[in-house]
Image (cartoon, rainbow, N blue to C red):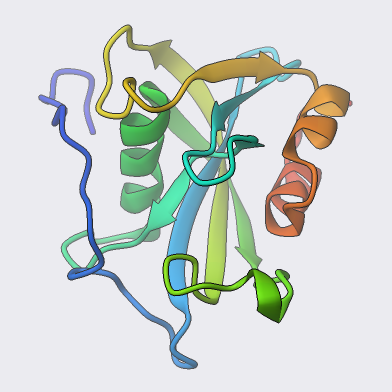
Length: 160
């Protein structure tokens, strides 16, 4: 989205427009949002488990590219405007079968490194998520048992 574009103040919900891969896996787009000096990463509070996570969510059928979905998720969940700098590739599902649920089915994650250009004071999920900057070491601790998120963070060019 261009800086002059109007950003929606309501998050998308539901899975009606969700894209799925060849094995029925949900296609998820996300960002590793870095400060301009690459010293910190911005994490958001998970609505499901309360821990800290990277902004991510479903790639929908009306979005031309997975990058479009990643930037939309960064806006909806973290209230950030960012520039994608690197394609970090696809991260396969690594949760154990008992961690998969109807609300959190098997997924394939595509992450991008992004530079945060602006943090808006108001954003769609402000009422249910907080955001916080972390160093690499603290981000690893904060994300805990989320191997797909740790893998994306490991792939980025953040200063360690």
